[in-house]
Image (cartoon, rainbow, N blue to C red; front, side):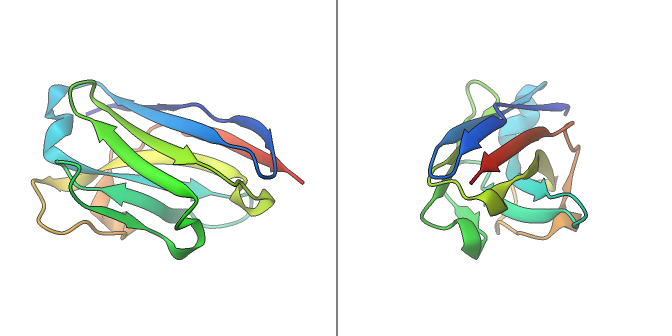
Length: 126
């Protein structure tokens, strides 16, 4: 499955953006999907994940209450709605799918994801 992230841009602190990640195959619906980000000079980190059927979500503490992950399996697309953005949210955002299909547990571990897209840059100005 190939993934294409989009929707990044420049926004002021307190603003909102919605990222999209489109998958190339219908098998997308079998996989958990995750959003990760990498700021300059830092390691890639987990942001949010959603189960293959959309029933389970998982967020890193720093984005809880501000970001919402969702998916539309009919459109082979996962979204990340980002509200109340902060300068520390500035990073390249990547989407990826789980290494296994129909997982029972949504995991935040980067090693449990693969098929990384090219990323989309989010810049939040203060």
